[in-house]
Length: 437
Image 1 (cartoon, rainbow, N blue to C red):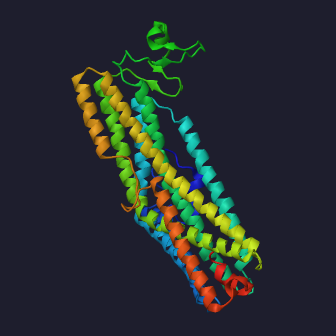
Image 2 (image 1 turned 135 degrees about the vertical axis):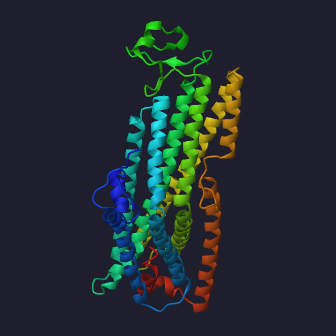
């Protein structure tokens, strides 16, 4: 697996990659390399800590539900980003091991199945570039709108306050893209393994494998291919034109499949250990932000967009909702896909077993199926909840519940004050909603 340099440098700028791009290259002494790898993360952590001091200079002494919701949102953002940086330093060795295991897994698939990674690498590169574009465009729009709302250069601390709010948004989004990218790697490699298994085992001649003639001759079933066609190829070439199958016995085939499966399972454990704990804080932060933004959007609708800059507030809230929507979608769909691909591999092993009469092969297939069933390729936030689409319904119901609670508190507050000053006063609104929108 090759690291995508654009995404790597973008992540390193925010301190999320404290390990070398190429771990095999050693330049200078060990201490210099150690400092070089960790310096971006320490600088990002120090800079963000300095920016956090600005929150104590925030003007205004309001004590209402809107201001409380603001702080409830701001604090998880800060903690999530700080923990992401700290664990990036602590888990740098595991991160390097993950990259090394990626390469080992690819080498196994290449040597055992003859798989070409041209299409897979192009796909991952495009996804990484897309992740950078989404982060820059959506995050940039959010930053620009918040800059218009809250930054006053006459009071320079507002600039640091703006940075302390926007910086975690970029960092946490990139962190979730890292996590989702690792899961997508396993999903792609499981799919490549399945394609190899579809055409791999010798001794299943009763199955109708389709072969692709290199001279653009119409496709024929394998047992109707002329004998001289095999002289031009290693053995069979699939209709995808990317997997070359080498002669091998059925027993060796199942052993090779098991080796790749064990590599994928080992990768899933390392990835979950490296990213699972931070995912708790990251998703909690996103959940709270979405709830607060929907709360403020309802306030804007209730006021009829009559307050000053209400359109900008609404655009900022929509930008943040879209940002977190992309975050949820990329992470949960990747977790769902890898689980689906793992089940497909298990189902095809059942199919291979049913078509074989060799006792040794059937026994090894049973052992492998039991291993894969007992060790599914699933991800979770440090064991608290799974990373798949099953979480979406729970998130939606929880957001609805807390949103109703916030609205009830707001209505009670307005009735106690006898007016809607918190909505209609543009000065107080700016103070309350800057960090939330």
